[in-house]
Length: 542
Image (cartoon, rainbow, N blue to C red):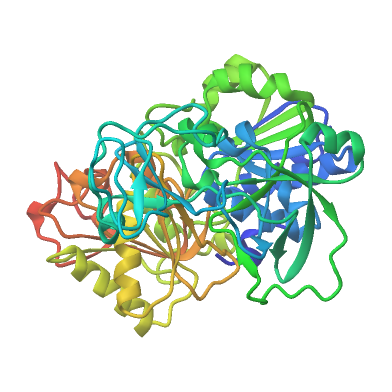
């Protein structure tokens, strides 16, 4: 994503009307895809920062959080004032960077302890000290290197590493097959009192304190942080598994510290975070339609001292089990609502297709200001819809297109997280590095793989429709657009409206997604798409 193009510096009249509002005024802002909502949320944070250090932007997804962080940084704001919803609720603000400790990390006793997580059960292993194999109390022979001590989840399982009884239903597990049966995790303590975080080549150092409360008492002016492994687990398992209740205060960095020294150990999936204030002066919510009215009434507003600003679009409400229309939010909260008038992202060539995806159709053309309103075909290519024999053939075509046309700032958007991994693996096998965001499994605990770097336009981004919300790319390619595989009309609309230059859609099933049925054939380029691939009755070509 080209942040220099995405980020708005010259505001139009409708945008300026929002920015000049008193920061202490509660505000609802509604605008279509490409109207600058996220940009204005960041500008609203600029306003808030002039009055108070107590402000935050909350979004629903991790991908959007990372993108907004770059926008905050571009305006010399604290980029760690952005949090995605789950983190805001459970831990606060992440310090973005790689977390290290000096020397070895170790388990809670003197011997390594590992945990196999499988089918929502936890199996604990520790190094055997009894020769080639060990025998439990039931006389069952265990693997030569590991013995299983626990097979059930206990609320104090991780926090209280006390005594454990040997399970009565122990099964023999071959150490060599552990990774085939489930993922192995280890829950660690830091072997010394210091941790480090590396942010864009800059090192920060933190020293362990007795507790959060004691640290606030002894060092009231110091930043206190904790280590978090929340990317490993779902929220229902957060307190039992991922979080280490150890707190550190920031101290000056030691002279000559070398992060490349082999004694410095990168903590896998570790995050440093600081608590959010119990109440905050200014709260800004982007993609406001992702939250329920009750979220605002019971979770957000009780934490706000001065004002809350909401930015959203009803057409981008894509979660079936949550969220609300902007009309419902406005009716419930009764705040002033302002509307963004112009579309700056979508070329008219893409807008013609996108506006016919949602139902009822919306107008993305009348106030289209992309290139001053001169963004139709042939200045910009028509979206392409193409049929292939298989998923791999789709990906081969995408790979060839990127290489032959020398495309950069590319997003490959897919319906499911499993599709992200599939595309990522395909590109990796073909020697192409990518940026991805996906979870390793559906059943908690899981690990989150997040290599997004929106400042690197050379590496294609692979995201789900949901994760891509709020982002923007020159070239968007949407494979696997099979009728049976597209979860939601609005989600597909969101994917298509991420494109600021070209849009390519492909499928390999018999039928293409029904959400393209109403698209005028004159507005697209069809390649190898038989007439019987379409669902229902299509508009007649003019």
